[in-house]
Length: 616
Image (cartoon, rainbow, N blue to C red; front, side):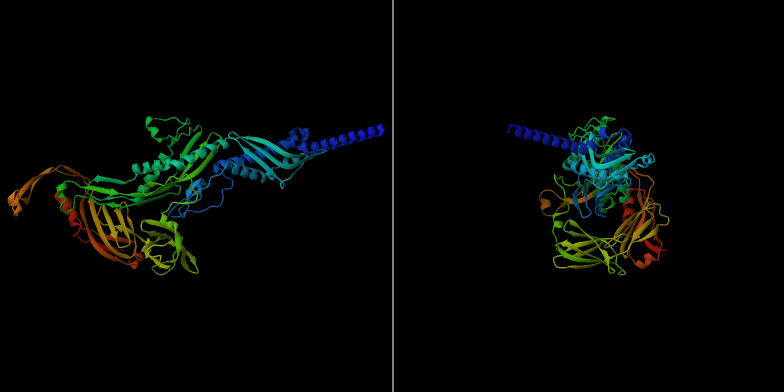
């Protein structure tokens, strides 16, 4: 009995030993490919090259993540519109970089911010898709056979502040003569600040979203470099050319946005005055940071107000002022992109955001903005279907952009598109009594169509074509030409602007001619007398007495004086415009005034003289 138990014990020991041996063999063959030291020395150069190739692919992916705002796959492109120029991507030196925050073409404020997890996943997918791109041809010429499994690949990535850990799980088989190895796991690290740069970028973005410091700097630039509210001393109209204002504003934005710094130790100020550009964000940035705007980036600058500011002081009854002044007031919409960049000598992480100024005001700061509509509340309730057809004056279909104005709100609706020869938009509008459909198309004047969308569901809108003609004022050296009709107006500062765009219509045409010679009017004094009621009882019964005042006018220097001009009413047909290349205006000339009274008389004479209009 004892012998039987002893034999059973021996059998049990053998079974345990067998299990341990089999387990050890399985573990050995399973894990031996996980460690570099298991690769035979004569095969090690091939394997080292493979790991180096994987590392190169990963580094390319890291570079793309930095250059493309934390994205390798930048996603679908959504275009902007003429009203809101931001697309979903900023074209940066030919490379599309997704906006982290922008206003879409339909006026929705949108966010598109990556996470560290999404970056890790995209980098892993990028490496997995490229394991088969490693070129072993040089080794094959030396007698090696290499087989890489590029079908069953998994890549794990961990992004840290100062490095990135990568593990690629796929098999590589290497053979040469009697030596062979199969390696199934490949781990390596990359020295990179991607994680740190991304964390800093998030902090800067959240600070901008909550405090809108970029918008605040942009408003300062607008107030300093663009005419907003003011008065200029002078006796001639001041003409503001929107294209020139926009150009100067872009140049100012380039210089000022590029000078912005956040509090930190990554810069030295050249002077105490540069402290204005240091934003007290509380972020304590310790890496190189720059804000970038380029004038050729898509930018919208709209200037609202009378582009021709007329002088006060020349009108009848105002000569007592003794001088002239020109008041002006403008309101702006300004939308432009800013690229935020963190960098050192080797790496870059950048992302763009959209800066929005509407009617001289920054957009509302929002802790959460994704999908938020920044239009008026009226525009949020588009529940009335209206079909809009757009034509030219020959009833040919014209594709156009459609917006809708109800009270003070302007809503972006969409665009008419050609279907079966008709340019039509079947869109949804807010319900509104006596609103206006606003239609814009390149080469045509803006058209307005009054409609009550709570009752009407169809609108046929006719657009008038613009014709560009050269402008000749004969012997006039300098003048302001204005064409005003019921639905269109244009002002030209001649000779700086030597052409004019007109549409068919009935115009009030006015021309003011100025001489640039400096005039000095000496100080004068004169007496003015008026009848005033007498004091006391006599005044109660209508008694009047004469009171006289001395009016002293100081010496005045006038840079420009009205020396000619006139007005006319003229109906201009589309045939006149289509068959002509030049518009000639024959303008009466008066000569230089010698006194302030003569200056006022010349200004009044413009209303009495006739301008003759000729076509060539």
